[in-house]
Image (cartoon, rainbow over all chains, first blue to last red; front, side, top):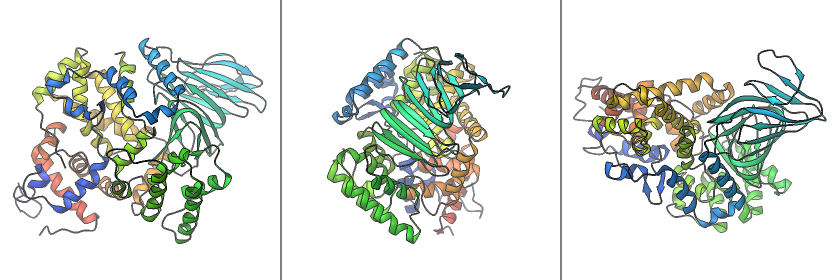
Length: 376
Length: 183
């Protein structure tokens, strides 16, 4: 076989082809760099043992998906237990739901207080709300003095505050999705992670087992405040993991906001907003970013490590080094994570550290979803 | 980089037959074997933050449709087609603002906007290559598969994979601005 210039490929591309022959330094560099973005084979089977390594025929029979999910939760480091007994209760409830193979998925308006309207997608005509099932595409909207509650199958409830509009996008045993067009919702779920998703014009909030309040205006700008469990906010190549007691800002056209503690001072909130929106390459932006980072790091407490962990991947160079230095004063590096790796932006090390802090939708839920969807 | 071990279609066929019979361990083994391939195919086509969910979707679809697969030994190529279709579906149904933001990020590869700096920047360059090259290069450089494995698991001929790797790498070097001593 020959290349475009008529030369024999086999004699020149052995390393690129099958890893044999003399390694090409450039390819080796790209392998090391890009390899951090590949599929992570460390899907939990048991600590220190990957599914890939266990998938030889001799080991395959030992795989127990249910036991894996359970052992993952049980083997997590003690620090994760700080996420709270409440989260464990949610998991237990959800596990119970899985065990009895939940089938009810339809959404229902179950409480109406004040002036509430429903707008079916097909007619587009407003009508006073009544209790009962919602159809896909249907909008529920409350007036200034009204509230309503929607039951989402067997997975939880969403309470609509005044001046709120939501649209049901999807309700099925393997996923529930709604759009918050504007207003405020309080959501409580007891579902496996990622089963319930709320979208606004600016962001997507993925429920990882929790309770939260979300407010957004008609552009999608707003705040997500988590009161129990964990929510991921996803937009523009960036995911923010927002644990209980933290807030993440949603801004149209901007990546998901860096989470901050709900008792953070106004100065810290403002500094985080600056870091989220100021360019790293603009000179004047750089000056303001440095000042904002000083404010954040100077005020950071042990409970703020989640904020700092997010900043590790949202800063570079000297900024990242400053964040890492402060973070190491507050919490140790976990096994398998090095300062050097963090400084160069190693995605797997960052993920591993995040997982140790409870900031992850680690892959165990994916198998859980299999069992959920297929009734295993 | 550790390259993944080679598998045979015969092993796939046996696992598919077991999985069809409800053997979750067999499907788990297929998942372990093909997750990097599906991940790579999706990573070459959709925003990075969407890949994990879409990998899940692809395997769910595969499991639900496994009974319709006529030739169990062809599982790999069949799964790859599902992954490519799922990526196409994503682009058809994705919200315009998400795609716009992603496109802006891809074009603005100068400043890393995703979370891993240089790796994300280089990935953006790979993703901007022509279809045949970007998928093959992602499987080779990101997922760590060898050329023969890429051919076996995607249904492409080894000759096609080899050409795609060679030409794609040449183009990638040019676009990364490093030139090569190709001559």
